[in-house]
Length: 423
Image (cartoon, rainbow, N blue to C red):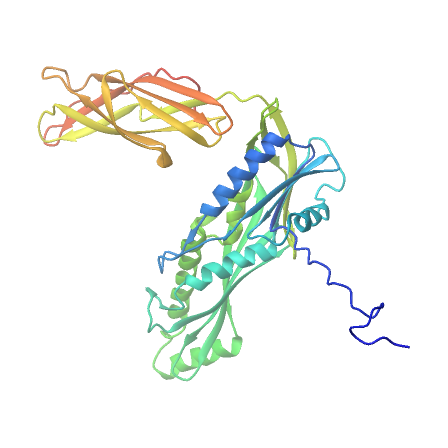
């Protein structure tokens, strides 16, 4: 006899199985990381992803690609898998199960790595940006009364290594609207030194009947000014919108695919020796699920170095100064994210230190009889990064002071005493 709902027995439905959501981004390397490195990696990545923003220049509004990022590094079957979700997909056990189901290396260990960026994540970012983009514009830019209306923006991925940003919309005409689709194709590749690159191209298409109707309308109204020039302006404006949203690439125009380069790690520091890992990428590939980039890492101990810039500073004045204030910055080699930056000078004063910009303002006194074309002053900077690397630069900077009405002769250059080499 069948038991009714509420009776004890097998008729009670089983609890629903938890939904396992795959990571938006997966990075896998053929060796496992130590627990200390895993902890530092999780904290560093979550902070960086949480603060990441994409700003639409047309509206000035920003969106967060990672609203509430979750980073989970796990050693599974002898390789490190690092899963990144734009927001928490469930409990830690569900996320672990999701990572266990993703093996980019196919069981291969050793000096290999792989990066996968999913198509749904790229599409999510595009739609987030589209949500704050101006939807009405004309050939000069955003205009609430413009004749161009944008209706959708989305991303697809396809072979051999293409990431395509699509924008759909229409152009208003007296008797009809012209529907169009503008695409920016980022073809991903690799450089000779193992970095990722993107070569971008763009195309705009429209329904043939709409084009014929618009040309006919132009003829009837006394010329072809309506469609050909207006459509060309539309293409330029759409390129501008995409370029402003996602940054520049080959030819100054790119879609969201070029942003994958920013997601691809080039170097990584771990706690055990050799501490520095450099990732050398092979030719990436793509299909409908996303983009896959693989390659071979190299391991070595870092040689931290920092270089101060400029090594020669020019100052333009109206009259002989008693002091000059000069901004300085630096570049690094084999240094992770700086957590402590200390500027100094034996014959000047540090006025301000802007850690986020890795720059500082220093003020130096100028003697009343000091030759203005032969001034040198001491500058130093010490940098400590988030994995304990330390580098210091200690150099004499040449200062050339010019009068606005009578520029003096500038020296050809100066030799700097540097600890390290340029990055």
